[in-house]
Each structure stands twice: as C-alpha cells, then as structure tokens.
Image 1 (cartoon, rainbow, N blue to C red):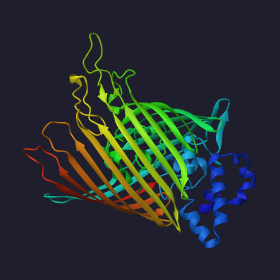
Image 2 (image 1 turned 60 degrees about the vertical axis):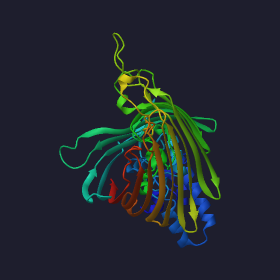
Image 3 (image 1 turned 120 degrees about the vertical axis):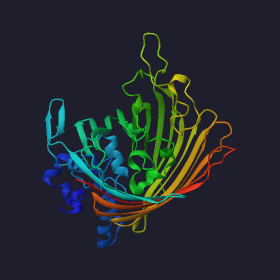
Image 4 (image 1 turned 90 degrees about the horizontal axis):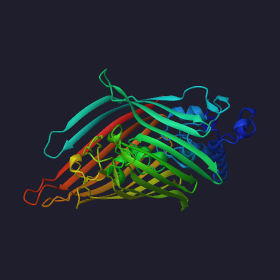
Length: 464
C-alpha cells in the first residue's frame, strides 16, 4: 500500500464502498480537506508528492505509536508535525476525541460496547551512545543498547473513551523490571461546537497531561530532544504527578481545570488535598503558521500534613506546588521546507512546607525555598528541508535563587543543536549535542567554580 493510501488521503476513497461507513471519521475528514487544499495550491505533480511525504505525514497519536495507526488506518505521519511525537491540528483533534477515531479496523460492537477487534499495542526499541565531558573531569562514554523497551497499549475503550498505557522497561538484562510507567484515561463528548472532557493520569508528561496539546514541553516535546531546553520542563513540570480534571475545547483551543499531586503521594493519606491547575490554550493562524499560545498556573499544596494526628494516618505534605508559565509555538512551511518555532517562560516562587515533619524545604516546581525563586526561558527552531531529515537549534537559560541567606544564585545557559534521519516513519536516528554552562552557586564566602558540560548523544528509536 502506498503512503498516500496509508494516509487515507486518496481522493478515490471518497466513493470506495469500503470507506462509506467511515466518511464521518474525524481524522479522515480533516486529512481529506487538508489534501484537497494542498492540491489546489501546488502546481507540479512532483512537488505534490514531496509535499505529501514531508507535510501530510504525521500520525494519529499522542506518541506517534503504531497502535494508533493500526486503529485509525492512517500512516504514522498523518497527525504529527515533522516527526513524532510532535502533533499537528489532526493530532490535536484525534487526542481531543479521546483516541476513539477509527478507520477500517473492525469493531466489536453491542449495546454499550464498541472496541477494536484486536488489542492495539506497540513495542518501542530505543538505544543510544552518550559521551559526556565536564570541565575538570575525564570525559565519559556510555552505551545503552537498549536503553529501554517499553510496551505501549493505546486506543479506544468505548465510543467516547480512550486510554494510553505504557509498561516501562529500564533496559537490557533480567534485572530490568517491568512496571506501569505513564498512563492516561480520557473521556470526551460533543456539545455544540465543543468537546467536553474529563480524565485522569499518572505520568511524567506534566501536570496538564489530561489534555495537553503543546509541542513546547511535556509529552509531545521529544522531537529533536526539544524537551531538554523547555523552561517549563526545567521547572520540573514534567516530574511524575497524578491528576484528575475536566476540559473543554475545539479547533480554536482548550481550557483545563485539574487537581494535581506528586506521584510519590499516591497510596498515602492525600485525601482531597491537591494543588489546583489551570491550563489554557489558544490555537489560531498567524502568517500562514499554525500557532498555539498557552498559559498555565499551578497553585496551592498537595497532601495532608506529615505530622500524625491522634489516631490518624500521616500524610506526605503539605507539598508546595506553585508555578506560572507561558508557551508559544508556530508550525508551518517556508517554501518546500517545514519549520517549527517553540518558546516558553516559567516562574516558580520559593515555598517551604508549613509542616516541619514533612521535611520539604522547597517548592515542588523550581526547587526554591521560601524567599527564593526560579526563572527560566527557552527558544528553539526546527527545520525539515527533506521529507526524512530535519535539524534543530535552540537556547535556554534558567536561574535559581535558593532563598537561603548568603547563597549566590545559580545560572545555567544551554545551547543545543540536533538532527534526525527517518529510515521509516516509525524508525529514526537522532544526533544531539548539548552544551550547558553553569555559573554562580555556592555562598558569598565560598563561591562555586563555574563548569561547562558538553553532551553528545546518538540514538535510535524504532516502534513496532
């Protein structure tokens, strides 16, 4: 089957009897409309083939996994931008539809039942070689083959519900146990021109993982290791958390209200003591670029006091969780090339737990104690001049003022360049060079010596 057929954008399919039952499928409607628009704009057939290969190739998933491709019948790059795991408008629509959209895959259906006829799963094979050189230290080169081999199970649970579950494996060897890593459970319903949803998660995708569509940070920021630069990630927003909440959205954006807590609080006396998260995203078009402008806020504390009440159970908190951030992304084309631009800013005020027994001196986000603060920003650009090759460059800065008297703020300035080559849509090789210069730190009486750490990584990732 050709890539065009894989992407379900062949115009002949509009009248094919095998597709009549699925003409209302969300992914197909978006993809056909997009392809028809491109046909009108492109004048040469050869150029059209390149455009379909380089632009209309982006999968229907939050992780670009073949499990979703099997369910929808769409190629891995029909809902992603440039390469996985970054998503485009099609991917956002599929995710807000709770991973329920299907293509030609048969369904098992009955009263109150609608699931794929087979369990859609993906095995991920990752490996890398990393060389690290730090000022004053001997360079270190380490192989990790495989670095991990997670199993991902994802897709439709019912007509309005879907899930993503990752069974994580730490790498090679019998000692590398298998655990449940990241998981998301999403439900959504149509109401007027909106999707209304609710869900929960336990993941390292970020506190807003119930419905996050940004490629700047979190779950979808892995393209060319962009997440390494993200200010929001640097503040610890991608630390393991649990959360539950509600959201409303459409093609113009979404708004989410959630309750979040550190993953470590699971199974302890958390009660209903969660921090509160508000996340808003505006999606528009500026200068021909698909543009996303977002903001986020986490306030409050999580967990009941660690001091054991009489006849009670000790909690793990209260854990201070305060963070403010904004993020911007623009994705589009310049000539024959696709270009993505991503930037963010994060600020976390210093906080200390009000319960001394909790022994939590710092804010969960940013790591500053009361009286201190964490600030960070990043900017990166990623260019894909060929349908199977891309390049990226970015810079980031963060500053941590601890809040402890007599200490000096620590600053980290990072520069990163990267490249990827796709052997297949589901198999790529990445080369990443990251240079992080640390200055400041220590105390006024004994300032720390600045260091520079240069890290070079070559990695492969294949999804079965």
